[in-house]
Every structure is written in structure tokens, then in C-alpha cells.
Length: 464
Image (cartoon, rainbow, N blue to C red; front, side, top):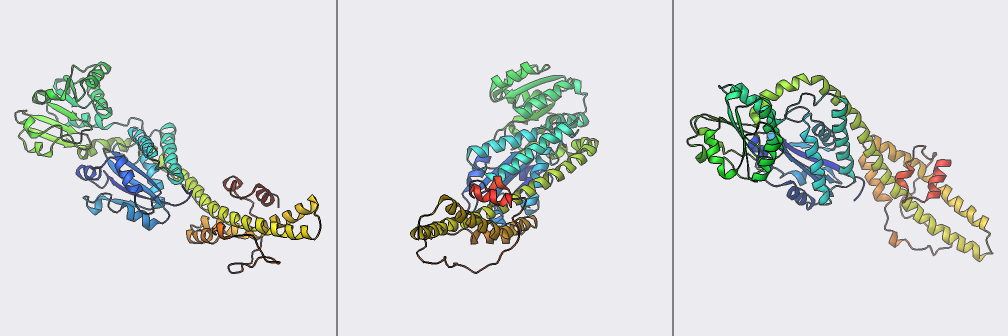
């Protein structure tokens, strides 16, 4: 994979979209999304992220228009106002904001960082992460870790599970100590909800899970859980419960209206993605269904308390964003410079070989004379390319990608067509004559060009 390109992104998230719309955008798993994106014309890298609050995809292409086209049908069933398309720089900043928790429904929550890392591993398994996304995603993870290590962004942060418990305490008529609660799901979200309920000494606490062994493990881990059951017992447990928090990973509804026919007064808080509770259940008398959208009021209060930390993280992102953008620009310029030097070196080797052969025919050459000829050729290459090298670096700094792309095309000849010169004199130029002047740039990135440009040329450039 090449070290250059542009990243394009698309996001359907809680700040613009409803739970139903996020669910629609998450109809395929991340592996399927990445596989489909990699098959699109011009896409060299791809990444997808799906959580309870967002469904996102990212691609790397040579041209931004190709990236937008590759992502156009990411969420075909979601209204346009809920879909956010991001260009290269927006994408870089957005990934850092997501990983640091600034874009989360629960400001600063820690789960998102693990979800980003899991998404990266999933994409790597499909060989979908190349140099561009590697830099962007690793920078996002780095910022996420810095935000939590160096600020109080996650201090006092609540999980969706604990936010659900806060919402229940605010809306239930009975004291929480008299409430019979049921948590459906023993995964990460279910565990957080169970711990949150146990921490407020709920009256009775039951955990139901498809795999009963996992429910029993959670019951042993969390003091206060009275019973662990399988989903086969769910109907009876729903009738007994005053409060139900659902958090499974099931692709289908786990709780249906039929199961709640005679449940009486019951509050169900669905924090799963896709949803666990059939929305039609809310039409039943006494059944109150809440979802992630309803948690906004709870999480807004916690966000206010961490405003100062959020400002610190914003400044951190500005700093890291500038560093990442500068690194990308330098890479882009260095790739063009590498092509330029590689092309020049190829021609130089051919012409030096021809010149030495002709000199040999006029008499034996000493090693010193051979070195003089080669040094002359190296010096010519270095001096001629010094000015365009600086110009390419300046073009990268000014976001002048057209100049860089043109340079890569001009200095990327088909080496197979360059045979040894058969003429008695120097080779005729195959393109327009361009006059260069100036000194080699002091900031030439020798490490980036290593392997593309002969070491002696790099040393010549550095020593001049």
C-alpha cells in the first residue's frame, strides 16, 4: 500500500440520528462493511466502527471524490440530515474526538476506546489497514489514552448502564430498594447495568442471558444478584419485574409484546444496539419503554460537570491534529521526492555507465578517475533536484496536492523502456527543459527516502 492518499469518512451517530436510524446504518457487521468498501473502485484501505451510539465507515483513496462515492450508499435507509460526510481533515479530528470520548453520549466514557481498538483489530484481520489509516487510528488511540491519563474527562463518567439506573430512579414511583429488577444480557453492557443496580441496593436483582453459564458467572461476580436464568425463563421473569434493562447483542428482538401482555406496570430501558425490545411493546397499558435517546437528559448533567476537562481535551486534540497533519503532508511530499530521485538515479546510472565505457575505450581508467565521474554525476543530480525538492515540501505545507501529484507523474517513468544509451553524446531529454537552481534542502527526510534513493546521494545532499 502507498504511503499517501486522502481519508474520507461517514458517520450516523446519536448527535444527529435516532436509535432507529443508527440501527438501520448498522444492518451489516463491521467485517462485511470493510469487505464491501475494499471492493469499491479506488479504495485502498477501509475501517468501520459500530457502537450503541454510532455507525461509521472510513476509506482511503487517491482522490477525495472517489472516497465520497465509495461511502455514498453507506446508510441508504437513513435520512440525509442524519448522515455526516467528512473530508480528510474532518475525519482525522473526528476520530480523535471519538476515541477521547468527546463524541460519546456519555461524555468521556471509557468503553469507546476499547471499541475503537476492537474495530482496528477487526480491520487488520482483513488486511484493510494501511499506512494512512494506521497513522490516523493510532493517533486517535493515543489521544484517547492521553485524555484519560492527563485530564479528568472520565472522572465520574457514567456508563449507559448506570445512566439507565439513574433514569429509572427518576421515573419509577417506588423507592429503588423495593424494585424488582431484571437485566437481560450478561455481556459488557449488561455487566455494567447489573453493577449499577447492585450499587443502589435494588430490592431484587435477576440476570437473564442466552448462555446461562455466563449469567451465573455474573451472579457470582456481582454481590446482590439473587438469581441467574436463561432466556427460556424470560416470560415469567418479565411478569415479575418492575424494571427491566436489556443489553444483549441479539440481531432480533428479545422482548416482544406477547411476553408483556399481563406484565402490569413495567419500565423497560433498552440500551442494546440493535434494539432488544420491540417498539410495539410501548403500546401496552402500563408498559413504559425507554431507549438510548431517553438517556440524553441524564448524561447532559454529567457532561456539564466535566466541561473544564473537555476543554483540555479539545486543546490536546488541536495539538495532536497539527502534528498528524504535518506528518501526512511530509509523507506525501517525500513520496513525490522519492519518485523524483529514483527516476534521476536510474538515468544517472545509465549515463555514467555509458560514459565510463567510452572513457575505457580511450585508455584504462584508475579507480580515482571512476570515482570522480560518479561524484560529478551525484553532484549534478543533487544540485538539479534541490530546488524541486524544496518546492514539493512547500507544496505539501500549502496543501497543494496538484503540484505533488503532477510531480509523481512526471518523475515516475516506465523504467523498463529506458535502455542503455547508444548515442555517442549525452542523451537527449525526453520532456521539456527545466532550469533548476538553489541548494539542497536542510530538512530532507533521509529516513523516509532511504531505500528509494542511493545512500551516497543522501549523504551528498546532507553534506552540501
